[in-house]
Length: 373
Ligand SMILES: *[C@@H]1O[C@H](CO)[C@@H](O)[C@H](O)[C@H]1NC(C)=O
Ligand SMILES: *[C@@H]1O[C@H](CO)[C@@H](O)[C@H](O)[C@H]1NC(C)=O
Ligand SMILES: *[C@@H]1O[C@H](CO)[C@@H](O)[C@H](O)[C@H]1NC(C)=O
Ligand SMILES: *[C@@H]1O[C@H](CO)[C@@H](O)[C@H](O)[C@H]1NC(C)=O
Ligand SMILES: *[C@@H]1O[C@H](CO)[C@@H](O)[C@H](O)[C@H]1NC(C)=O
Ligand SMILES: *[C@@H]1O[C@H](CO)[C@@H](O)[C@H](O)[C@H]1NC(C)=O
Ligand SMILES: *[C@@H]1O[C@H](CO)[C@@H](O)[C@H](O)[C@H]1NC(C)=O
Ligand SMILES: *[C@@H]1O[C@H](CO)[C@@H](O)[C@H](O)[C@H]1NC(C)=O
Ligand SMILES: *[C@@H]1O[C@H](CO)[C@@H](O)[C@H](O)[C@H]1NC(C)=O
Ligand SMILES: *[C@@H]1O[C@H](CO)[C@@H](O)[C@H](O)[C@H]1NC(C)=O
Image (cartoon, rainbow, N blue to C red; front, top):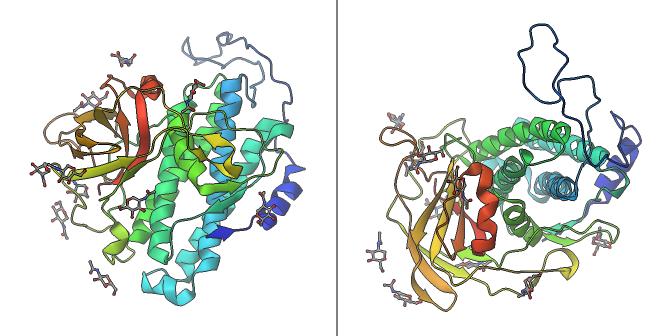
């Protein structure tokens, strides 16, 4: 399935002329983060609270490529929401419980993406990527809602994962003001799907390479001048028995006590690709791994990366068991619920939210999105 983006290009081109704040074409390499000259009622410490103008621009290649990834994410959401609205009839939407006002909310969410894409384009300046062509795996409204719920989740997790690592804290601030909207979109798509709106206490972060590995699968072709995305494309991972909420004929609602889609102890069957596959937009990317032999499955969810053994390995397939456990022990939220990320690894390295990227060299394949609840 394909969709065109020419209308979006027009909208962006016309609005880009009116950048809401100065666009820095050449960012300084370093920045003086001296503390504030004691302003009244301001405790000591903190960063960038002095009169030095904030730098709303990449201050490193790391920043540029993180923002480049985020911009590609905003474009696909913009395209996807328009595409879903155009693709299905009023009757098809109404059969899932979505009326005209609900459909307007999807339209409004697309408009939010125009703003997000503009904001990031303004920070990137002349080198900002343009929208691409995309391909989507769904054939009905429920599939559209489920895909939208998943894509907003990995957009959210991808941004949360790198925001605190940017050199430009000013750019990170702008992103935090988009990702909070993205989180609301994810929740709304779960409600449209008829699921419990937020069955987790914390939204996990993932690394840029994990994000790009997921996103690049849906981008078919891009304008030639778009900057290359420099993150790693990990080999693909497939959960062949993933629970599918869209098969349960749920109806939209603010909150539904949906019977858990999965429970601890559930068997997952996994298949993964070998590295070296040509992938991504225009076939310009190639999957790669630096990991050794597959041994574990990492579950990235809540604040935690939890490992289960990968068993019954045969060629590029294996099984594992959904772990139990609760974030802070009995009476707290389960480690695994909602839409979580599953990765095959060679080691069970201990990582926490701020050093998750230490897992990248150990990724054999993935992530796959596991729909546990
Ligand atoms: C999108 O696809 C159309 C039709 O194949 C093609 O004409 C156009 O150049 C593509 N656009 C981009 C940005 O790749
Ligand atoms: C994943 O596995 C399922 C079940 O075997 C299959 O239908 C689907 O096509 C696979 N997806 C990919 C991307 O390989
Ligand atoms: C959902 O609806 C379809 C089509 O009406 C039907 O075939 C299927 O059995 C239903 N599934 C459930 C879980 O009720
Ligand atoms: C919803 O689930 C909660 C937690 O299991 C339970 O306490 C509550 O009674 C349920 N409410 C309804 C209306 O099913
Ligand atoms: C996941 O959350 C839903 C909604 O709160 C709940 O019904 C379900 O039991 C939870 N699953 C697990 C495994 O705790
Ligand atoms: C999962 O598979 C293993 C090995 O095939 C089996 O021993 C176990 O009973 C299965 N567990 C469930 C919950 O089906
Ligand atoms: C993966 O990348 C490394 C480093 O660039 C390279 O040496 C290796 O050949 C690549 N592997 C594949 C399968 O392309
Ligand atoms: C192990 O995997 C093979 C296929 O890869 C399957 O036929 C077999 O049933 C599996 N065994 C267990 C114990 O899950
Ligand atoms: C989950 O992560 C939090 C924060 O790092 C930690 O305090 C907690 O112990 C972890 N829970 C489990 C079950 O590992
Ligand atoms: C990640 O950080 C935790 C502390 O939060 C530390 O114990 C762990 O060793 C670090 N992992 C790696 C791979 O550096």
